[in-house]
Length: 70
Image 1 (tube, rainbow, N blue to C red):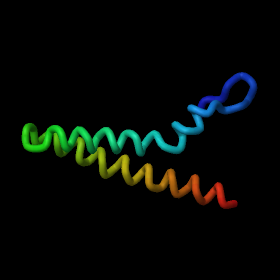
Image 2: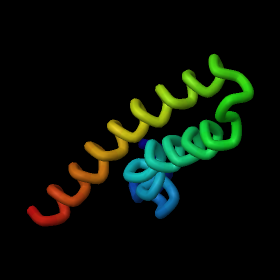
Image 3: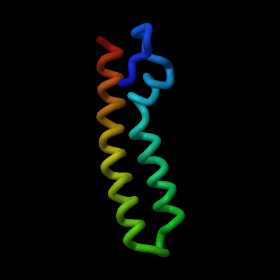
Image 4: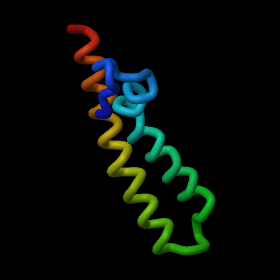
């Protein structure tokens, strides 16, 4: 996480920390849907990106919700 000079995190940095993997997984999913059937190697790599980034984002959002309730 990037800290600014006054030791406060910007709103964008907080959002990026929470939801960056979710946005990446969504972009990979769109790539999979667009490229389905045209190039199987590219589709499989993006499919793995959906699984990996989706899993990471699930645990990131879960951590944010858990820490919010504390």
